[in-house]
Length: 141
Image (cartoon, rainbow, N blue to C red; front, side):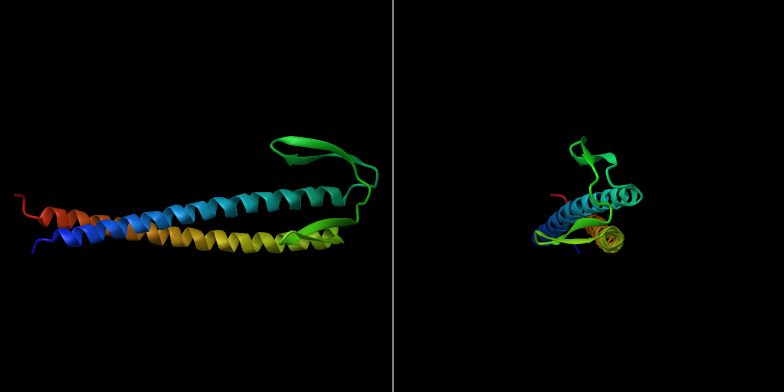
């Protein structure tokens, strides 16, 4: 039995919606990956500062490939962003621990998003195969 034009339209719309969802998840993954990279950079910086002495000069990345030459005045405390624009003072070890926990959460989120993306891509492929089959069955006039 040949597919009606309405069935073909519905399936094409379903594919477009799925493709929109793929774009959304890919955007979210880019944000999560940027956060993972930023978090990892913070952990590495704190790990290196932890072993320095007060008064040590170092270069600190400030973004866009730029560095700032600074002198360390406190090697025991750091100010850590905890979300919603709130920062707290913590020991360097405690900050590193918190950043490691944040890294684990971000990795879980990334894995979850990647699984959703894979499922959507599988659904799109299946829908496109169904569409191709329906088009083949449609009588040529």
